[in-house]
Amino acid sequence: MSKESTQENKKLFGMLAEFANPAKLMKAAKLTNKAGYTKYDAYSPFPIHGMDDAMSLKESKLGWIVLSHGLVGFTGGLALQIWTNSIAYPINIGGRPFMNLPAYVPVTFELTVLLAAFGAVFGMFFLNNMPRHNNPLFNSKNFERATDDKFFICIEADDSNFSEEKTEAFLKEAGAVTIEKVYD
Image 1 (cartoon, one colour):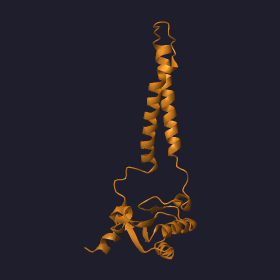
Image 2 (cartoon, one colour; image 1 turned 60 degrees about the vertical axis):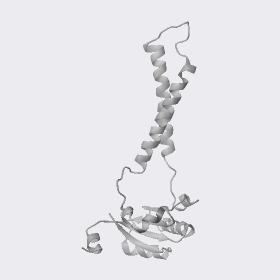
Image 3 (cartoon, helix red, strand yellow; image 1 turned 90 degrees about the vertical axis):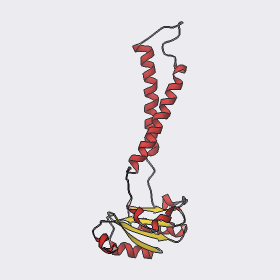
Image 4 (tube, one colour; image 1 turned 45 degrees about the horizontal axis):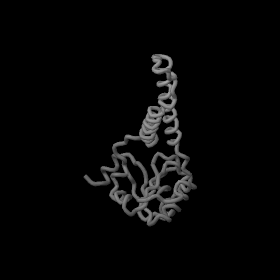
């Protein structure tokens, strides 16, 4: 069974284009964004300054998720201690006040950090649509070098502007060294 016949049965995931260097990848990302593509990503072995702006990426929601979970931990820890020591089980030992805020600092701090960490981990899972056990890009031999020395852009097939012929021509015009169709 040839490679062509097996790919005909699979759904097209997207078009993967390789670029020669970071500058050409940055230029291609800007062109892709200007062309109206919204479902695409750039892959590089190292961070490229300005790539977020070139792709017009929105600010991450992760900070707000972590902050909200941290505030829940803070208020929950403080409220639990105040409720148990002042309302539910008030025990007067040596004339000390029922609501002794300095004594509540360690537990409140620990719950703040714990819930903020949970918010960060599970927020990343949620925002990155994980767990996804296999990304179709991992089927590409060329893409194996994305973490070594190659630069890629993948435009997904479910983008509203995607057309096999037009997208391939666009990527060639943008300066792609190689273009590969990636199947699911």
